[in-house]
Image (cartoon, rainbow, N blue to C red; front, top):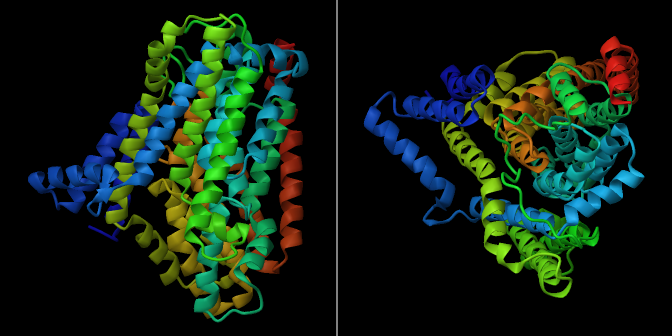
Length: 526
């Protein structure tokens, strides 16, 4: 069953069930069972054994603790505790009041979130969660739905990371490019310069970022997003109260009457400094001699850095809470236990979804779903002019099906290099750029993607609501990028492709912005 058309069945079953039932854990569970049955060739006892092995692999790998997964889970729980104590210390309330005086429109609140998403580009996990913590008080006050916030976060995290050389993504991609160039004896440019040349060719990124700001500025709501935005504007409900949302505090916590903006800002600053500092430290521990910043980020331990940064942020948060309790007397210190539990409880839905997603991704990997899709590209006899757009689409399908853009990079980038080297070496960089863009697109749309899950968590939005509301915007960006990749393939011109993307984005702004429902929403909001 591995590396055959049947390997597509588990992700398709899981995704179809998510869309039909809107119950993500049930859907992932069915996908896990389907994958295990295929791997076990329908032996029931072997199926249970495979599922157990997949679950065990989340925590123990090759006889050792799987620190990557464990640290990510711990970081989520620590972030939940930080969020709870920021609220208890009065930081969220004070920051919301401060922001209301400066950010006075719904469009402004959304643009702030988008800009923060671009600025915090070191790592997509950290971006999704940190931007959510900062932006949520602002967007909540301006009645921007959590679904819209999740879209803003998700559409500025991975897209920025994938074109930033100084990021965990950039370092990983440059390392892959280096091996591909060496394999094909390409010496006219280095891996770093190749990455820099590929940045303007990543058309999905530029279409997505442009549409994010257009949607925020012109209040363009498409598909299911209309329902969420209308409810937020008219009823003041930024999320569906009937649906669970990871990262959202369930019970009302006591709030200090003497909280200040610093009670929110300093924990976030500590989180950023602690995480980035830890990334530099863990990366420099691996690299010998005088290391460049790129080498450091290429070798950094992202998950370890996240938990170290999280602990530093938690230390600062607790120090500010103790100041509120014992110096300013704004809150009673006996709420510590409740704050810790509520913070952990808020993150448990995200942890459950991640555990299920990791299990199904592992089983899909064993079924070699990605290799099967990649083999379809490698064995086809297509014209080289179609190569960039075909690779974009296949990378999108692969990332969507497997829930991992990095896995798609690792499989498809070497194949793109092989095909370009064997047919038209001038298409090497456009082909690899198309893979990067397609993988980010598929990752955006996939309900089993960890970055999609963490964007929901950062925004405090129901996961399936985020997936369904983001999908139309991602498909529009992908459609625009596809036109650009056709132009690159047939003309070889990146400039013409970028011009086409710009024209299509401008047309989207005109056509979508002139729709009557947008005007009605503007009138309602005012």
